[in-house]
Structure formats: structure tokens, C-alpha cells
Amino acid sequence: MNENLFASFITPTMMGFPIVAAIIMFPSILFPSSKRLINNRLHSFQHWLVKLIIKQMMLIHTPKGRTWTLMIVSLIMFIGSTNLLGLLPHTFTPTTQLSMNLSMAIPLWAGAVITGFRHKLKSSLAHFLPQGTPISLIPMLIIIETISLFIQPMALAVRLTANITAGHLLMHLIGGATLVLMNISPPTATITFIILLLLTILEFAVALIQAYVFTLLVSLYLHDNT
Image 1 (tube, rainbow, N blue to C red):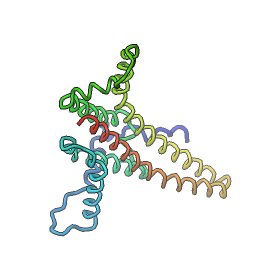
Image 2 (cartoon, rainbow, N blue to C red):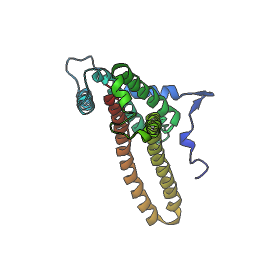
Image 3 (cartoon, rainbow, N blue to C red):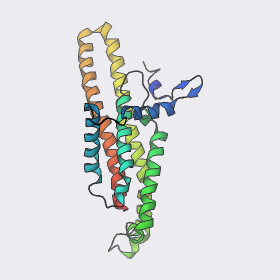
């Protein structure tokens, strides 16, 4: 059981070539555009979900920040669908890879910060030095605020990676223990199987919550800079 503990986190290949790009593009198939005059229930639910996301995420933004609406909606739907698909058996979850999450976090964070320095230079620089700071603490506070600014994308990526990876590992361990206990103690195996079902339900919630948290923090970084 321990030999294949991290097998689900290995980048899948086909004929020696990585197929991560195909896996990343797959969730876009789940949200097709409708060409009908009257939408079916799936498209109606999709439109309702998009409107809910826009209402929750973009209400606090200025007109300049609302230009990111398409990016924010696409981000939360991509992360949420990728996390949910990764809960299926024998699948690969790209969001368990720190490099994948950093490739999302760094450009979005950098875009928000550059937007702030471009349109609100004085306000952005003011974050490095709170008003009323004693003169003796100014150099230390500037260093601390600078470090905290550059840690933001790393915190975004590590939070998403750690939560998704921990859930997958725990499900793998409990599932393996359930298989072993089936031949040793069926009553105990039944209990562990119930725990596994409850954990799976929890992981469905975690998959959606982590997508919401990641996107919400990006939205807040954008709000601070627009």
C-alpha cells in the first residue's frame, strides 16, 4: 500500500509524452456554449452559477476591476471542475502539483500588483508604510511588507496544493486500510468504509471551497490594487 502512496500524483504519460495539457483542457468540455434559443437545464444551471459567481466576487470592485470578470469566473470554474474530476477513481488532479498552482497564482498576482502600481501608485506604495509609523521602525516595516507582498502567490499555491493533496492521501490510506481489513475483520472494515464515504463527501466540499478561496483571494488582491 505504501509503495503506490504517491502514484496518483505522478504526471501521467502516453507513449512517453506527458498528457497533462489534455487533462487541463478537459474541464472546458464540461461547460459548452449554447446555440439554442431556449436553454436546457444544464445551460440554465451554468448561467445561474456564473451570475452567482459574478455577484459574489465582483460586487466590491470598481469598473477597472470588473474588467477581470471573465478571468475570475473562468478561474473558479476551472479549479472547481478540476478538483471534482480528480476525485474520480484512476484520475489525475493537476491542482496537486505545486508548479501548476504557481503557474496560476504568480501571473494573476503579478497582474493585480502591476495594475495597482500603474493606476494607483501612491496608494500601492502606502501599503508598505502604514500611517503613524515611528521613524525607527520604518526600515523594518518596509522589509516586512515587501516580504509579505511577495509571499502572497506562494501562499495561494501552497494552500491549494496542501489541501487537495492531503485529502487525496487520506482517502488513499483509508481505502487501502479498508481493503486489508475486509479479510481480517469485516465489522471494522465496514466502519472504515463508512468513514471513507464521509471523507469523500467532505472532499467534494473541500474541492469547491478551495476553488472559492483561491479565487476570492485573487479577487481581494485585485480589489486592493484597483
